[in-house]
Length: 319
Image 1 (cartoon, rainbow, N blue to C red):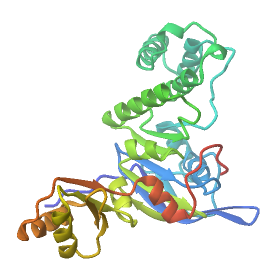
Image 2: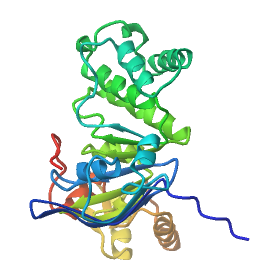
Image 3: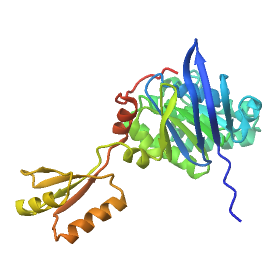
Image 4: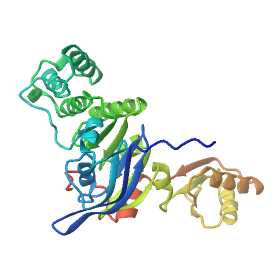
């Protein structure tokens, strides 16, 4: 008997939301499997933060349905809140408290007994490389330290679904890398991550699946590789040892462009294994020797531009 498909950690169907008569979400659909990272991309004002606010029960919506961990966000908001954590664009850290005190406060809010709370706090301080600054006021923390503390506070309650809304905006490269590593560890532990970001390399590094939101609609969805292969511009570059080899290859392979000075040519291709096998077979069939072969596929910047007509932006997100 075929196995039963696992319940999605997040399920959204026909979700609609308007502000002042302007549709911010115009009937979007997606599912996020448990224990994966899902990235929602889009320009400023595309509706990413609105989607996070709805799924974390902070605001209502006008139509459609949404559930988190099997709980309906309208009928069971308390159950949803019990299993989620949210780290927004702006830190929830209390600057007047120390790092440890911020975490202890969260442990108290989750009604952990004193011993369990202190164990949880100590473990999180170590995990987020904050033990050395635990007794310092959060006001003295760098931006990266505050973001790590913010995420650590989210984890006190051991949520199974975490919403990260622009989690690394403004961080230095080292802090971003550390946050990425923490996200990977969380997913390895079975946590589901819902990520919004305008850093496309971040989505490429972390996401199992990506949806691109534009003007309130999901205009594309898939794995990073699927999205990259869906836009034009992919090609295989072939370099030859002499002009004669280039000439033979150019006559043999249709649709290619050549660079006589570099003794190279570009053959349009999606970069997939079947296409590469076919290309190599044709070269072998005609006895064409190639010195070097490199595959070039569009990156997520190309995908973003192709789908939205705009380059990726960084900065504050509007709804």
